[in-house]
Image (cartoon, rainbow, N blue to C red):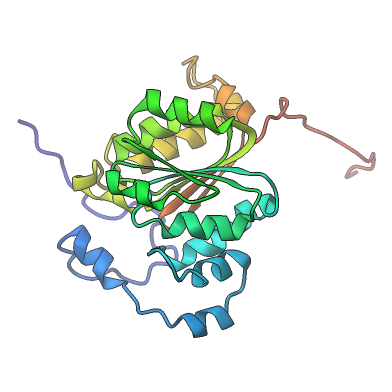
Length: 270
């Protein structure tokens, strides 16, 4: 059996903005998550909320909701255009139901909110304007039925099992079914670095590596390699941008024509 060779040192140029990592890595993913837990003073957080997503989250007093704080700014950056409109939202992973109520508050009464979870008890969460489906995010026929029932999807928020193969299955099933200008958000992609969730640093099959590969697909028209798949512009033609954040990847759909290289003016250097 061949053993993977560990790199002898950092790659060239890796000193950029380095401040020094701890001598030992965390012992487990549980240690990582536990390290950053914080108590919330709702009155204080409401007073200093800087965007409507923060306000909607810190107004949650009914069902339990849990989010990383820095996600709230990202949500508002990419989803604010849907507020007050009949947006169709599907959240994968319901947990205790608080986030579905938060989305209802954030998007407004005209929003169509659906959630999917494997926990049968989540049916208790249904209320006017919120529909709950039971099943796995890896059940592709179920995902297609949900999309059909919703009459299409504008926003997907994947906060389900955080297991890379399932995240990829969900994305490949739902992304082509979304509205042409939809937004697909995958949360907690830090799990891509944990073997227990189907990942690892630069591990094949990790969702983060899959997303990095889609960056190449976004630029397919400029690839000189003879491989036809690498040069297929289908994904690029349907995708405006991929945004990487701490623990989150956001895909923005937008049908767009082939690029145009434009030149204006006439004066040049002599």
